[in-house]
Length: 423
Figure (spheres, helix red, strand yellow):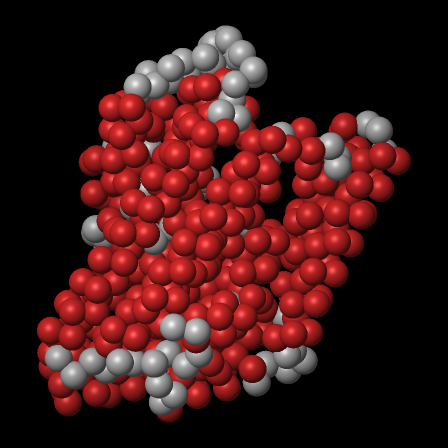
């Protein structure tokens, strides 16, 4: 399917899902029946996301190893990685700071006046301890991260493997060719999987609306509106930063990532957009040596939307419980989130786990998460879409710095492998 057609299908499926979900919620008043309908719809989105998870591990491994292995020297790996991390850290600080500024400016939690009741949120606040984080980063097996879809651990192993291939030169050529062949096969499989994306979008929206009703879209209108305003501001800052480096070409990049942006927004999953981002970045064109290296790193270290949400939601909960936070405390919270948000891509309900850990550390009521759980899916849509913009710009900027905005054989093959899936 052509990109424009797929974008139309995704938007139509999203609108239809909202319509069908709203009809079910209004015509079927029994909550148990609504939940049953939602369960049936969820099967469609669950199948799509499971198929996406099926290919993420081998796709990240193969593309990252090939990208590093084709670099002429190991020094290039460190240079590109250093430039990527410079952008990631800067973007992270901007995202966290913007969330902190806006939540203090808008005060969305004022007037809620919640009282601590001792209700558990069901989120494990200890999931992001230092010990747990270290174990989450460094694998003890080359196989288990692939089985468990631990993206950051796959990245770490792939970097070691790719650097070794680059260092061995001609002796690793046969291995690299085999892995490159694997990457093209996985890209073709990805093309097949992406064909059912509109069905998954419809199912996801219908399931959410049928249980919560259209009212969930307006119940937290103030919080959601202000958060999305913040995301728009963040998008603007990222695009301006990209313009300073890429020039007018940044607008062409934004148009190219429109489809993965919508896919991430409608499925509330950054992972779902990863394969399509790889294809669209090749059309910019960005050398696959860069995109295959920087993009997986970005999925672990450059979750701009998620980080902004963490500061916004944490302070919102404190405001809702009428707990004042000093400037120093909020800065300490920002720095804490700067560290704990790294590598959360593989943690289930990642942002909620990070927020729960932050609330516990700063003696804020963990049950405050219940205030946002009901609308978290809709907030996650914006977070995921923002992550797409941030990682696309990061990859393009690093490619510009490296002089790798080129059309080469690898980029052409990437596009062909994705587009030759039968319509």
